[in-house]
Image 1 (cartoon, rainbow, N blue to C red):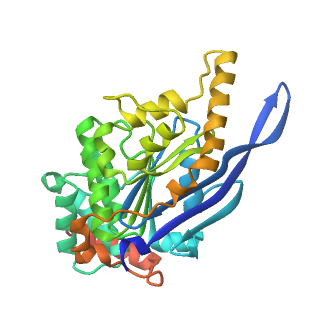
Image 2: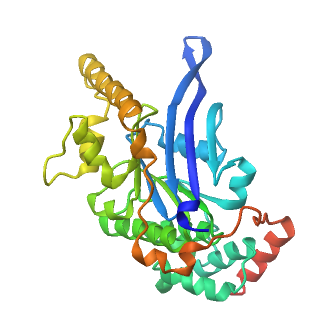
Length: 337
């Protein structure tokens, strides 16, 4: 299977939930729209960054993809042409939440060994050594999880999910509250995994840095639950220039688009209405002008074509769900590593 054969297709997704509104001694529930006609596409070997400010619907979109969203969901999401059900995602997907709790008494090495037992992988010792090296955790391999720094903890969270060798990996703000060096390190690790394995990586980011742009193949920009742009990162500036919003030189293009074009200004009623109107215009423009960008095929890097791991991946029929006994057995043996 080549990377371009593996496709996550998100088509016309709507998501709404119920909000409880309390007024004096009375309360009532009202439906609230979270995602409005969201479409995106990403191929194997690519990293898709879902961008947007707080309340834009980034996390909600991840939850919808993973089958974890509460409320009404409409639309269609497919992986390799198969409807992406919660069961299919459990078999072939991984989800790294914004906050995740690992077993504090285990060491880093034991945590990775435990994850690989649950994934029923062979050659666990070699895989653990490789994972420690890939995640820059070799120096803290025998340190307890509870004693890790925040960046080390986040990289270990990645390793636990990567141990499953997921075809589709979702990450909610994996670089949140990390310094520039660790942000660069985490995103480059995810890019390396995607390109080597031909997998799909989807992550959310609120304030992306320009130095991570080379690792982000595609961007989906959300505002108030709607799509302002979705397509290759390399085409984003061309698109906004084409519709009349060129990016000045020496500016971080992602910050410019997020702050200047797609942020709701709540400082006053007039500013709110003005920014809301601009966002509505951008959403409608993308529906008319931008769909070709979203469907643009990927450009495979030369080194990926020659990499055996980059053109192979497990099929959709080989997912394994661990049972209770295997979970207890994995915990027992990981403590002896």
